[in-house]
Length: 260
Image 1 (cartoon, rainbow, N blue to C red):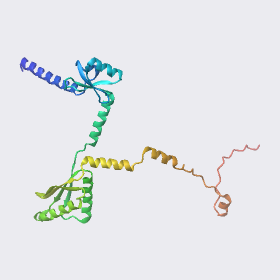
Image 2 (image 1 turned 60 degrees about the vertical axis):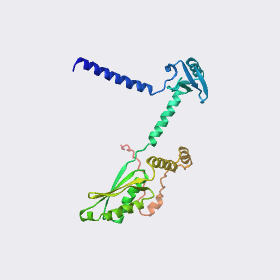
Image 3 (image 1 turned 180 degrees about the vertical axis):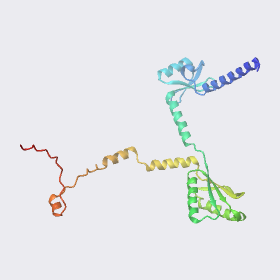
Image 4 (image 1 turned 90 degrees about the vertical axis):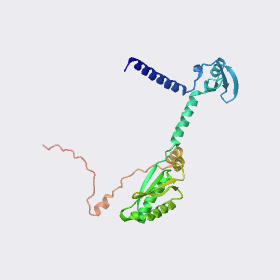
């Protein structure tokens, strides 16, 4: 490659890198000494409008109130700055973003298969699985597999799928009508509740059924102490009268001195 092309490639790479670095730097607001404008439109900590003031005056007010001067609208003319505790503001923003990510849920497509000649017990078991998937906010792909001459009776598969849809109508609805795909017939059921609503309801149900820390501590304090197990006393006379030898504690026999 000619040297000119190498230089142009290095120039393009450095330009893209600098652009990404500038975008990363701009993602966070400028605070205090990083603000480089002569005047700002100042907003108080409670949201009150102070007006257009010099940057030095705004920094002095922030220092007196032990707060930070944060640029909240850099594109305005003049830029809008607010007096706030930037550390607390950033922590609350991170907590809100974390809560939003936790409540965000992606719907999963579950799959369950039926045979055309299915007995009632297997049908009830598979229907229970479908109800569990729908109550969790997931979609369910129901598939009927035809074998041999069963392919000439597609109406039986449609009746089976319609029966299943009617049985789970409180939890789901038919999102995709039954259609035959080769040897299989497929129907998709969608949940009535969204994934996020189902997750929040399950979390709330667990929290309602779980006692708080104070209640568990009070239960432990009110619970009686466990009684210590005591060894039963053995009546030696009763044991001897019953014909069994009495149990006696073994004593170490001391050797007697030999008589001279």
